[in-house]
Image: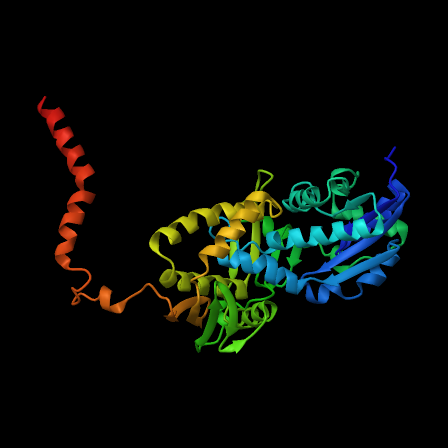
Length: 407
């Protein structure tokens, strides 16, 4: 028998899985089920959610627009870090999970619920991200993960269950070529179904935010992004909120076929998976930030930051946002970005991002010093002593080997 639970808050998306979870929770635990949907930029996916949730048996639905908070408190720190998972993935799904789980926990506390629930599968990363956040914020809440408990093994099983209950579900669930999508203001991901075949090029119909490069404009477009202490504050000279900047760059980048990613990644749970990601605005923003760092960070800081960014990317990917290490890293990136102020101009053309100019009031780049003709600060002759010291280990090792051969 199921343990006694009086009230459950479900992280609800309105898709087949969470639609089926509502009646299953009621059947299994005989308790009230409340739905909570975090608006992180899913666009039209949010249409008609309250009707669907209540039709499935939920007593109420909470929905809240969290896009501003997501951009300002999660995405902007990530941009400052330059974190990219396995050199390709801009962490679109990963960075949104902590704020979603945090809000579900808040609703559970408000409602006096005993447990929270989610529709993450037992093979994916999201179950860990969701539950890791919940554990950090309220370890007293139970977490119910139906995909790890129920007897259903496929979406066909869920459809039969919903039909038996005479509960409506999205028509897309009946599509034999069904694949999974996750969308927020930063990106959209596609995985599962026919996408699992890594031997063929993904069908063009999968892509949503970006056009194929063949259909991108034949004329390049220039875009200028202004940063203050590592945070983007304006696009093409117009000051904007973080949310508006992401939306604006998404449109510009998508039009030019920028931000597509087809990758086989290493999941947290130990297996490899094939995913398609679209992050047009994020790709432009991260590229621009890196270009500005190149002239505003000293060599040692820049190189060390790259090392830390890789570890930071793993923390985000693994759902470890609410940890002491992640908190400390955010402080590090915030501090190291204090000099990253300036403007970067980029040329966008058929999937490519090309630097077209960089300016910063505290730039470390000096055209005069870099010039071959200037000797006031660095004379060519200065290199002689430096190179003799730098090459000393190689010369000593070569002399040692030479002596061994003689002996």
